[in-house]
Length: 132
Image 1 (cartoon, helix red, strand yellow):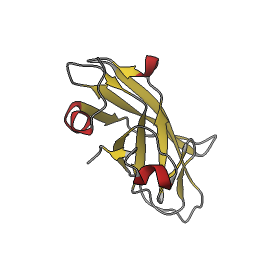
Image 2 (cartoon, rainbow, N blue to C red; image 1 turned 135 degrees about the vertical axis):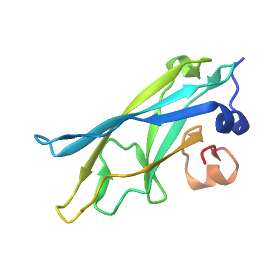
Image 3 (cartoon, rainbow, N blue to C red; image 1 turned 90 degrees about the horizontal axis):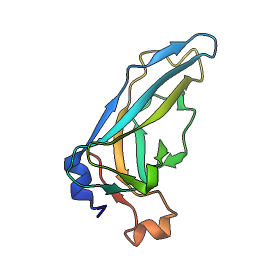
């Protein structure tokens, strides 16, 4: 039986980011984020990954939306479940909007339970933060 408790997600979801590669033709950095279920039971979805800490003028082009100031990605799960030992990978495309956006592209990944909903639903406890 799938579970969707945040305690399970904090302890048993492993998140790994691939190195970013730069595509000169498109002027974008591409990579991926892989989420693995390290538990012994299925975890129900969906999951949401927040890409936090981007420098100003650096954008996540394939973002599903914003959570505060940080872009997020919806992570669909096959059959709405992530089986034990299973993983799901989502692509990441980042672009610097100006030559003034100097420095390396760095970010932190935070995994959330469920999907982001309007503020009134969040206040009812339907979205729970599961990342560090």
